[in-house]
Amino acid sequence: MTLLQMKGITKRFGSLVANEGVSLSVNSGEIHAVMGENGAGKSTLMNILYGLLKPDAGEIQIDGTAMDFSSPLGAIAAGVGMVHQTFRQFPNLTVWENLVFHNEPGNGPFVSADAARDFVRRLGKKHGLEIDPDSRVRDLAVGIRQRLEILKALSRQARILVLDEPTAVLTPQERDSLFAAMRHLADQGMALVLVTHKIPEVVAITDRITVMRDGRLSDTLVTRETSETEIIRAMIGRNVPPTVAPKMTPTAEPMLSVRNLSVRKGEIAVVDNVSFDVRPGEIVGIAGVSGNGQPQLISAVTGLEASTGEVVVAGRDISSLSIAQRRAAGISYVPEDRHLTGTAPAASIAENIVFGRHRSAAASNRGFLRKEAIRAQARRLIEQFRVKAASEAVPVGSLSGGNMQKVVIAREIEHGAPLIIIEEPTRGVDVGAIEFIHKTLIAERDKGRAILVVSSDLTELLALSDRIFVMFEGRINAGLTGSDMNENTIGTWMVGGVQGA
Image (cartoon, rainbow, N blue to C red; front, top):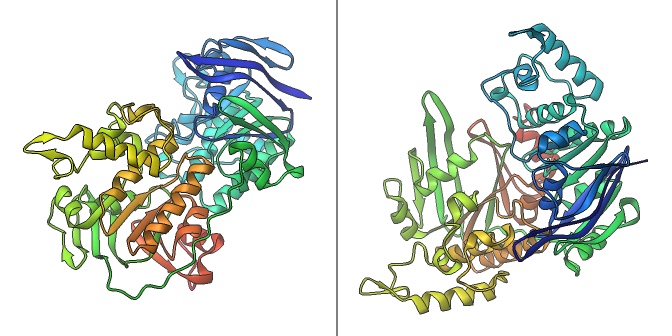
């Protein structure tokens, strides 16, 4: 039975057509993927379904009844729930306080904590998503916090559940637990819409796939009757072979040496006595569940965070140097958040590419910027890195996620440093851009650069890395090579490992 129908949805933002005549149907008991490159229109379509945007044309039907959502409250009342990639929770409150917020059981102004706890237990048991109602959210693992988000939607009687990139920060074990819960919900008659870039996961868990390209419907596929190759072809119009980097065992002296590095937040060591090396001609990966010290480790190496211990680049101790001095000493850095840290979104592509190099002879003369030289360099890099943009003068914030990421990577590779540190190289990036970014990193490694990659995507780390270190509670608790670099082993160490493993 068809539970959700979106018919002929069109949405324009000025001259940009984000959705053009898009139709989507999802059946009761079905897990349905929505896929497409960055800028294909997936987010716009889901935001329309959840009442965050109003379509210019088209119709939404639930159980055959036409809907007109003016806000998410209308969508929620109609049975639509959405689990966002960024959790919307109160970390210092308990599970039950988060779950019943704005719908507290009780008498008048008095909240019945016992009734709320019982509600959490019954809801969790019904859907196979049990959580201790008295746990503080800040103390929960990422997978359990996501479980709470799903329960929040179910507590509002959601029958249609949209999950936006739900596995982005999960371990393999947490991912498998999520998939089991999703199948359980579908078996109860719910319709689940999975928005993701991860094709292997789509093949593993979904029943049908809607593929979008350039704001239009490209294809609707039955999962068991298709293949990864067909899905990619529907998304980008060509085949993309998987990236498999041949593993390297360089013998040169380390380009980066980290010794006994620690970062403290009050009494807590968020990075605790960490040591490792990265040599020229290798890619070293850092794996770990979110919240185990990976961002603070990179911030300490790059100078963004105060630390103790020693950081050596190309044989030089840079521990006491400023951020700019460390960059000059041989570090290129692609941060995790390309919007907040990696770019100035309102500035042009050309301006973003010259950031950090504006005092160089190539970019300035006697204190004045050489604007035409800067624009020419930007045009060259736009072509070299296949950035889809009208010109070098457009604001970088107007680009899709994949193209914005290419601009940041182009700038950092152009910097020419022998050490490249890159966080989440392809988070939120479509399959075509992933292929290009991976090939670019491998090519830079083969030129002799040392590359340190931090990623929550184990498939990415396994494809790129020559060695992988796993972080848990601020420490490196495993260094893996060869056959030990597999999802099960890495996932085990990500949650603390096993004695004797």
